[in-house]
Length: 582
Image (cartoon, rainbow, N blue to C red; front, side, top):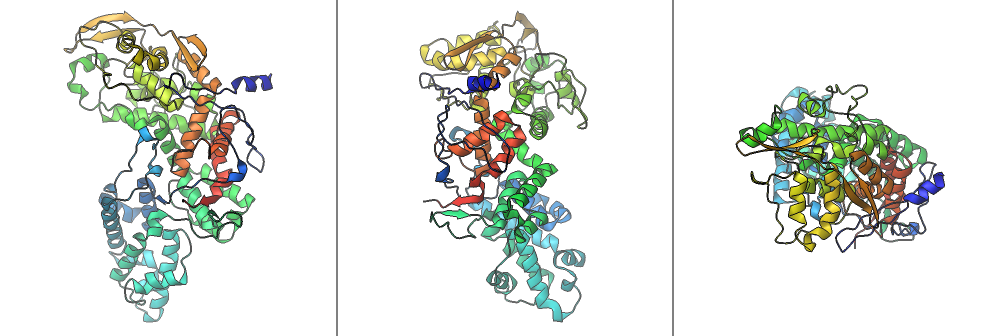
């Protein structure tokens, strides 16, 4: 039965009429000392040639979060607090989801703004770290303040060697120690606060600090463009991926003693990183980019909208509301990423709301963040797709089209063409006494040009019709006029015929059935694997050249846990290699 079940799940979903290209998946095996064998034919169409090695990944600038974490790691929390104003000005990373760039780790660009702000941060940090004898001593040691000229040269070189190792994430060469000790300043014995501040600025402006440079090893014998990572480069990859922060002393020591380059030592460090609370940063960034949580509605200012306030009925629209919706999904994902499967995530009946407003929307107690989260009473509130961040809108009406687009694009990785130039997203008026579903149908079924794609987009949104624009369960849809008066109360129809796999249509009317169909199809597991690849490598996947990695990640997710998938990327041989770009 198990084999039959797996074979039934091995489907390849192909686009219809040029509108959709849904990627599905197949089975795999997780565990053992080696990554699962994913070579050979695959029904998803992902090619896999294990002998090909990794494709090229660009040299990567530290993301905003990684850069700020690196500064804090180097100068300490007290100094970082003093320069918070400068850190706040670090430019945000540029995202371009329409072209597959969903994550901060994919932004390689450096502008003059980056250069100027990096200089400002380095200058502010250097002055704050040396503005008192106590701080100077904490930075460079007692030799910087003891007045003994006999140890000044050693004091300077030791500082450059030790601080430089942490800043550049590897030991400095003799030439680099000489440069940062003397050549950059003109004196190898000056232990004044100003001189140490200058050395700090020089190290924090070094390209090897701002970029993740991986060029410490010679090319492999068989491929002049393929390079193994050194232990220190591997430490950097692990830390910046799993913590969004530089390697700590334990990782650097594992690189120094060679244990990180052994299977046992590597697995030990990988397990330690994933068990650390800092792993939450990677989880939050992954789910934010995967589901575009930054697009969650903002409610500030809607308290001046009579129509919305009548609809909200006691829920205060403010910045905190949208933020709590996003945070709840982050906590949901982190919870199951550490102890559950993809199906657990998609079918969860637990609330992770830690504030009164969102808990009241869910009609559950506030979760204190400890122990088991509260369970929803209504069986329709099931899984990821019914979370407020997924279904909410900054209006008094729900938006089934936008819900359907999010399911197709973000959960299933469908490639939707841009809407026709004459397409509109007109909002209902007081005269439109129809449900949100009926309005969407009238809007999108007026021509074959629209209906081709909306026959795929709309139905998933219709199934979620029992959730209003704040994510509350509703038995009927109440329509409000612009002055706040009640116009009508209309029955809701959530039944829809949905094709997750083209050619296989199912009629359903509840979120549990929709979520189960998505899980069974395996398209969503493939989609999440693709997003995780983008997050890990800082580029969009090549469905052919990166097929082995994608299949390995997807299969780990299907037959294991979310944590298995996240660990699997580091166990792939490509994680320990770098291919030079042409």
